[in-house]
Length: 236
Image (cartoon, rainbow, N blue to C red):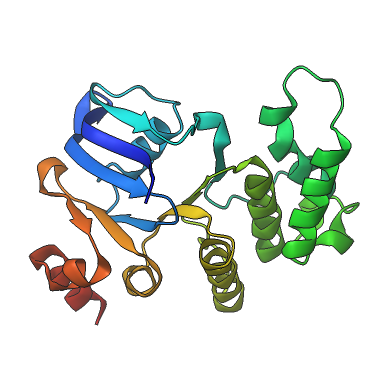
């Protein structure tokens, strides 16, 4: 199994305070990693480090198997689009190909096909010409997931993808992510507050907690750990 990303003794700060300290874990091809942790535990800081937006204070992030930050498909947290945002669904989705387009002024036929297939896959092809500001929350998240799929070559990074969605839209989004991981063999890293769903779907769990007391392992190991038992008990 190829390792495509590894954190080695990573330390990173937020507003001058270390929120991640000495963190080590690795992601293999086809893994489904769920990142758990309370607010302020360093999840957002870790995401910025993985995307290359923020440099680590210490340690390193090693990308293997030819992976580059521009090869990561990123789905940010759900936010309501501004009413004046003019782009169509199709324009937002194909913008995920910008990293591979380079300096070319136009998208290639292959990139247009990639965007079209992503929209068809997520059931939003009929919305391609619609203004994205007119979409429901669930439709917006499908649009942004399709955009991330256009950017992703080996890895999808999803930051709380069901936040703000109703239960049905959340279930549909989780099903889509599961399918991308199991059927398409896409490696997935998902930040989540849903401990129960994470244990059900993930192959690996990373729980960030008070810097040096983080956990990394299988869902079963996490459920049997002191930290996992505590959080699961709070969910009951």
